[in-house]
Image (cartoon, rainbow, N blue to C red; front, side):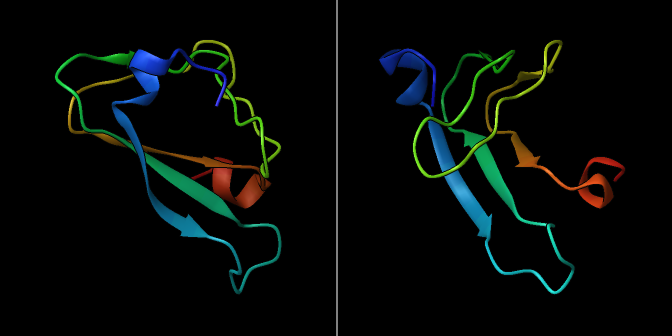
Length: 77
């Protein structure tokens, strides 16, 4: 991901949906395991996944999770 090493130390990929029944509904779940909020604004994956969090993405508070997905059906949920 395009984030500093300190921030990366507190993020974990906690779920991957790589072959869903619904076409193009893949997603990755990230969890902040740290004690400080993580701002994902315009952060993105740099290897294996083509995804950048949009501008104005919410801050990921400690011990919370968020998902990254590309399909219209995913983003409408």
